[in-house]
Image (cartoon, one colour):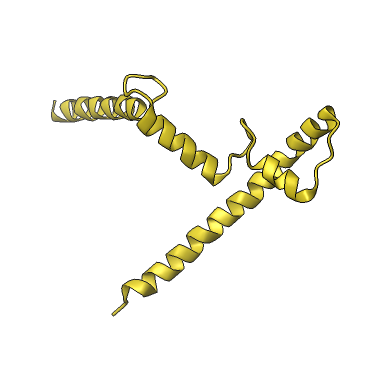
Length: 111
């Protein structure tokens, strides 16, 4: 019989690998834009400064996981539910359309 640990370790390892790859690709994809910004500002960044700047860009090509988490929290919990930028509002719009389509499909299937 499999224990919980036997299932948890592989899943956690894969998730950790995905997050690490996400950070690596965020740096790779955001670095050209950051180098261009540095060049225009006449600055020279070390490798560690470049990594820090690529992970904190306001509008990155590929946002880092921590940026996605912050944006998710802000748009779910800090925006009014009636705002069209709220994830709760957009979830309701999607759910209502889905339920209406399901109701129409059921009604047409019965007829």
